[in-house]
Image (cartoon, rainbow, N blue to C red; front, side):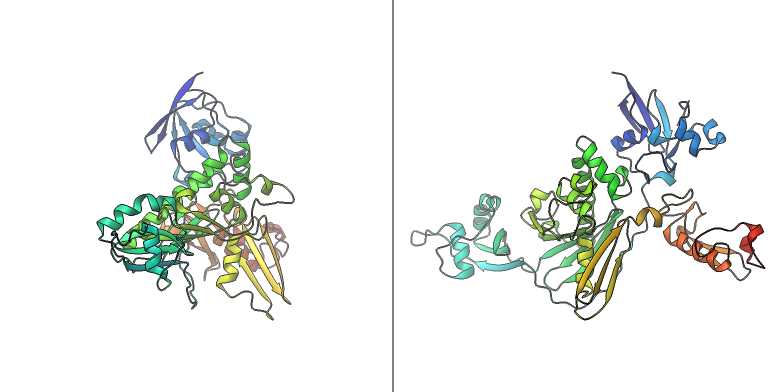
Length: 470
């Protein structure tokens, strides 16, 4: 079997792949995160790279999306180009899944926190001939008085606890989750009690570090969801999970890497030991929750879109692969339906949505858009693929909200278009908010009608703005 070396620039990475490997698969193997809005189907034309010293013959997809001038300079679509020789590949910044603008701020409302994680400092009597109680019973007795019952506990705790008790002189802090003892720590660590809250979005992931004693937010961190290299939308990722060997494991590995990076960053910002984080709560659409848990998503790929589970899930952090205290708890909020997930449940909980007697509409505008309508005590929900439209996936110059994206469009005093560009750099594309602004501007100017039809200059009546001269 023939192998070929690829060098990726400007990264300087070199890998060897089997002949016939797609360039985008080689990029994934090299750990390079890139945007693939159409999931590598060749429909969007946004994975153009320059190949040196000699590019392969252009294929039908190259000719469809690339100009003759670009083809002559060795530019090809990475998703449809197979590696049949050693090559150097120049990846443009516009193709990389980096630099997204992620919303972190929001509105808080008063609430009373009832944490399931408790800490109690106890000073235990040391064992003696008169008191030969087992270590776990000794802890139970200190917490609840005389009892014949042993507390519910994790086996890893039992393996490590004896040395902790003896080295600390039997002065320890007992950590429990829903009355299950998950940790015994030397000394008084009652004040060190933290949790994490995650919003796992299809495109972005945000994590917040919470002080469980008061419920206050301490720090936040965010990342792009690195699953984007397998497709921008949920359907593309479902397809990768069910049609690719180890696809489900690849997707789970990507999201776990992002989650653990966020935990490390948030903890470092706050000066908190991640071992003192005892619970992490996760919200996301149904697909994201399933992929995080490593569940089969084939049922979500076809009508009637049946999930494996819709109830809440609790799993030990060590088993989930999440980088908090290994005996801590990971709680995944329940989903509603196949494509209406726990993120919608969280929205409704956060804004007191279910107060009876009011007509309310909640809208979660994301890559997977979800709506919930409450009227006359009846709740209706639905979802749609909003991201590809709002992020300009099908537009020639559409892009995410990254540096170089036009984010706002308006008509200036001279009647011409004015724009704001993220990062104050030259514009390279238009993101969702810019597209919405532009449509509004064109509608106000009479360039498009109420049906969305763009009128040609000869069909425009009367005087319109300077925009028409374009």
